[in-house]
Image (cartoon, rainbow, N blue to C red; front, side):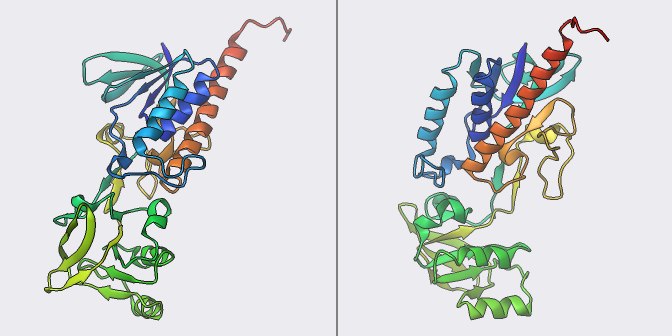
Length: 307
């Protein structure tokens, strides 16, 4: 039996595998290799790995965790996880099944983007969602900030750190009050409320934003807020308790509402979605799982201590 099945081979899952592998624990990572950051050319903000490509980052991580003989990786899609008396049964799309004492969900999230023609041509290359990840690369350029959600003001404020030439596109939504509008004007941020009809540019580099009222606005990049960041269908199917932000509800040890099932990284949505945060969460939760495994073995051994 696997001691811990890790669902997802991103930074959270691989970091967890490293901790458990170094503790001589039998771990299998189930990974369908469809990372959320695959759309971008480079990843940023990870100390010692700044500006690395997502593929190179993952290849290095896999090489490191597979140094430990109790760690294995299965390139499989997990379709279901069921509770059994000894732990969990992990069901795969190939028809195979594995059993594990504990499960760590590290599947990450899926971005649900606004349905705007041309968006996918530029997303991850000159249109991004995370300013902490890609703000430096977009610095001091004429940027668009595109958001049609209640957190419009906050998002625009954050993006303004990286450029003084910013236009806010609300895409037809109205989540700004009079004070918000005054504050944006004071910071020289123009507001365009007409819905966006499409984007245009060349070689994945944004050049213009087109709106329903006939305007063509020159912008060389920007940031767009996803409508939501949802977990994969597998996580949805488990019917685990959620937080108000739709992440998985976990306790201080990273355990979900189902005993023995843990979550780390973007799956739990407890930290800003970034590589370094996901890796940190994976390491932390793995140490909690390890502690539990050690305690179970330590206290179940026959004792010569008199009661």
